Length: 63
Image (cartoon, rainbow, N blue to C red; front, top):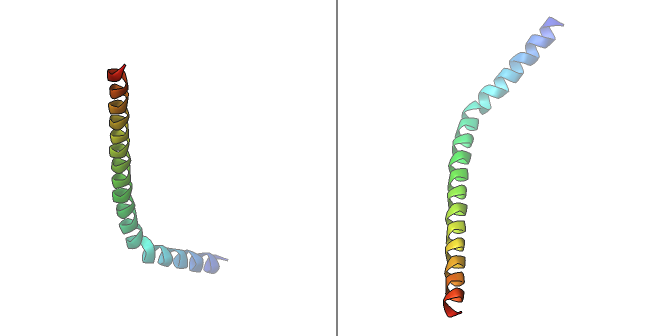
C-alpha cells in the first residue's frame, strides 16, 4: 500500500513540477491583460459619460 501511495505522489509532484513555470507566466500574463482590459473599460465609460453630458448640456442650452 505504501509503495503505491509513494509512487502516485511522485507522479503528481513530477507533473506539478513540469507545469509550475508555465503557471507563473500565465498568471503574470493574465494579470497584465486584466489590468489593460479594466483600464480600457474605465476610459470607454468615462468617454461615454462625457459624450452624454455634452449632449445633455446642448439640449438644455437650446431650451
